[in-house]
Length: 278
Image (tube, rainbow, N blue to C red; front, side, top):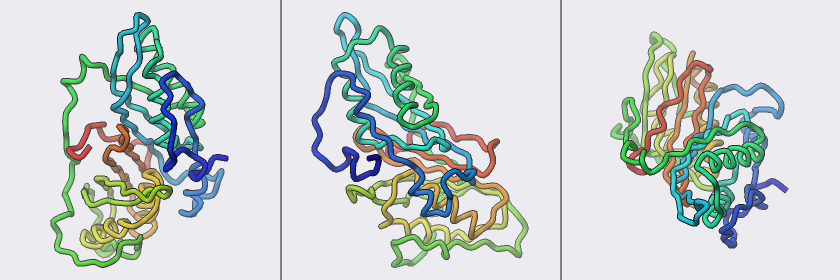
């Protein structure tokens, strides 16, 4: 069965060193989306992708010498499944003692297996050691809400904190916060993230938005589902004309996950640049 309880997450696992695509475990997106009022088979109310960065990838050359690389994986939000993250880690470990003829063969193998698991084409880019020096730490563009003087004792989702000043002219602004936290719905471990919200519409009340972000602190949800919740509840409560929500979560098991959801297909995906906490 493809539910989180049947995945390797939260369980003791044997670490396989030889290539094994069967280690990948799909989890359907539909149940999490049903909780947000998105019916299975209905058009999605957003566009977007999930960008994964895997920092622990190694394989062998035909002569036995190891190779290393970073892997950047782009999973379409329209895919029916997500890839359970621990299963991805186990799958990537299975490359460790496996010989491949080239980095291109590794890339193509990753794309093929991950696309089968996700149910849609997963794009894969490998960053090789000669490109490591070009990698940099960046910050999310926008006004950071975190210094606002708010008081709160609410740590479960409260969309009613989201307010828009409908008597004010529409604006375009980008807001950020580093206070996003939720919990893995299987293990209960904390997931830490930074959030960027860009919109055009009536001004969103900054203090209320920050309290809403903080209210997710004890919420149990996968990264992708949390971002979709934020997107849906902002649309429902504030009715922006255009909206994008982007989260960059801190790394776990050598993998970080960065979901992006947007109201319009022409809204650009931000650069895949690592934040300080990643």
